[in-house]
Length: 214
Image (tube, rainbow, N blue to C red):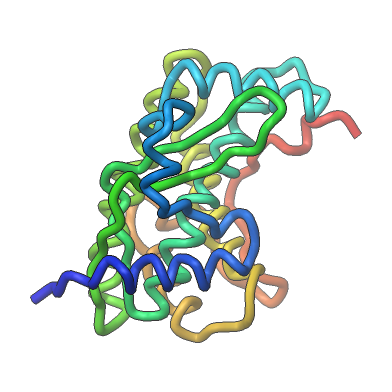
């Protein structure tokens, strides 16, 4: 039976894993995330504007290239803190996830209310994380982007898988985190998007980065 985690414990663990880097940060201060600058995630109009800014940063006029790389970056921001926290025994609840972005600024993710669950093993953690991230966050993100750009499913889920695998490249080696990432990658729609080899994760398809000038 899944057990609720104490909110203070979730805040503490998210604070710990945030030290790995910006892609592991989730703001948990309700006094901050309740501000007008924070919007429900995802927000279609903000995504469209951010895709345009990504294209300018990358030096490409191809919207689908910018959107592909933006999706991968946002997927990394979703997977990284959740998986790292789960490896420590707590899965944070992403219900009520909000985000903040303005032109020229970096993306920030935050929780309006901090909750979570204690987990005992990889299977239990994956059973909570997979539907929450894939169905609850990545599919709506994909659907919002598809209103203004065409992205093939293979590209989208390859990006999601690559972002998940790439989270292992940041922070100290962690057997529990590695096992959880492998378990999630074995589940649809990520299964078959790539595999681990001697040089790390190799994806089966391209993210379109090769089309970025230079």
